[in-house]
Length: 69
Image 1 (cartoon, rainbow, N blue to C red):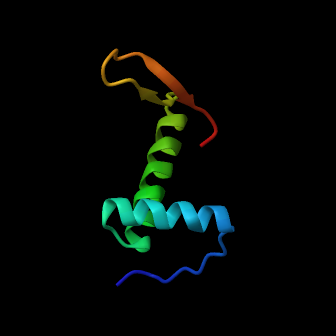
Image 2 (image 1 turned 135 degrees about the horizontal axis):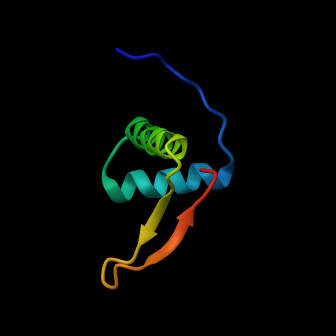
Image 3 (image 1 turned 60 degrees about the vertical axis):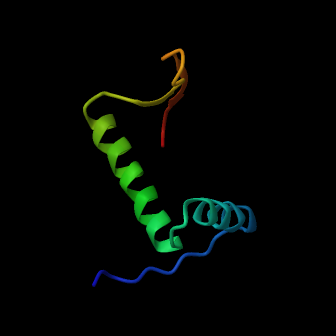
């Protein structure tokens, strides 16, 4: 079993977390694990001089470059 972590979340963050977990059918813990994995990926790529971005599935064009994640 992993270590336990307690977080204080703003009302907006808590509301968004609830929305995501309900839509995906996952626990808050799983949502936080996925969020951390995305942050770790962003950090790893940043160290390589790369960035993460959001690509439009239809046009394959860059919509948003995620900087300083």
